[in-house]
Length: 248
Image 1 (cartoon, rainbow, N blue to C red):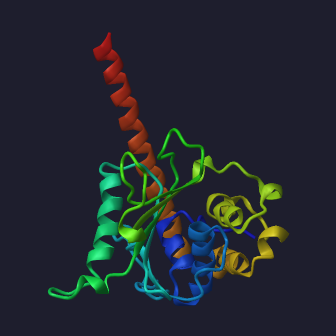
Image 2: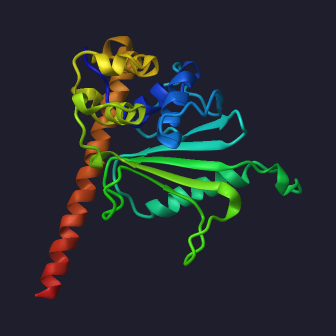
């Protein structure tokens, strides 16, 4: 068995954003948002992946958006490389998801909570070692909560996750391992397969189950992803060299 990289945008959308992936997304969000507790029982994917709608390299898939059974809106985004204005983009997407619930003139009481789940394949926060960090609006000095959890930000930093297969105990661990290391597997490990939703996700990610056209798109987008990383690393290196030269 060989598995496609879930971090590639096309693959991520296919695995988590298909109509038949609702159980996968429920399990994943329960793991990330609620620490594995079965809080989310059902959801609706607002912009489902269409297997017949293949995309070109110039196109891009929107984030996965879902409405939970309590009417909360969740926006899920995979970001593989640093980009200019990334923090503002995350804030904008959350605010937009929240504000777009209302038509002009509708009552604010109709607004439901919005959650942004952002997965990064780079270290975003240098100080905390936690691979998951969750944020709410709080008062600056007294640290008490504001806005009654109407807006929440959750970040998953994949490079901070260091566990190997034998260390995976929680549902959260297993899903993050899947995202980070699925491409290293040559079969479905027992401790991942015992979670039916992860087993299903791995079967969707199994290269043998994809068409030649889908595999071609995944590979081209993976190459584009590596190229973008290379450009960013080169720009950062040149910036550092320029700074050092200026300092001298």
